[in-house]
Length: 242
Image (tube, rainbow, N blue to C red; front, top):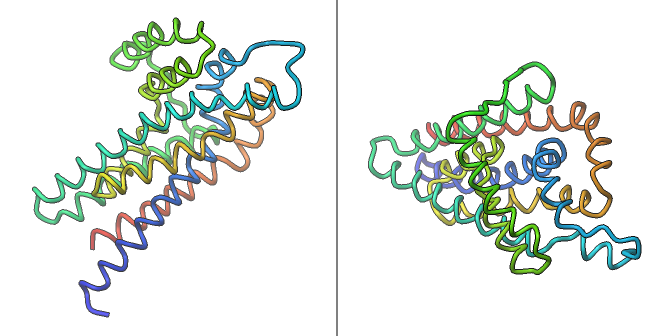
């Protein structure tokens, strides 16, 4: 196998690996991170009704329009990130090195999340700056949508909250940029958001109490899994840039 063939083979392998890695990041991160951050928005959309049982409870807790709205925003952001990374790779010499840097940034952000989950890194949340401004603006948009109980409002809420500042999403978008194409970036983020749905559906069905029970699991299983994903992305970043 010559060098060019090796690069093509590695690129195809790493692309699948990156998508799989983001799926696992979302699956693990949703247990600890998304459950706490997005759980209140999920619960606010689920009507409290004593007669909501069985299939009715499942339908109400699924919040399919809301998750489709989130997927729309995230996938478009992933496509934009992948296109941006690909454009930079074409402009600068050693373009694959540029893509590798994006993968390393994503891996570093996931590692930070893992260290925080293990209690080895304490980062105080900031109440000022762009993140707080964006959060306040989105809260104003979300408030009237939460008062409505129709599918269109749920979808619009998902679209809006897809822009909610989120450290886990920032890492995923950095990885999407490292794929080097809009299509690959969109597919990678689509895998990421799809894997966050089960945990949020569980909260919609079972309530906030389930998130409390996940905290111990998050420390034992989730944080090491995020660290492993960060290591895998580092390997792809180093291998793809050589």
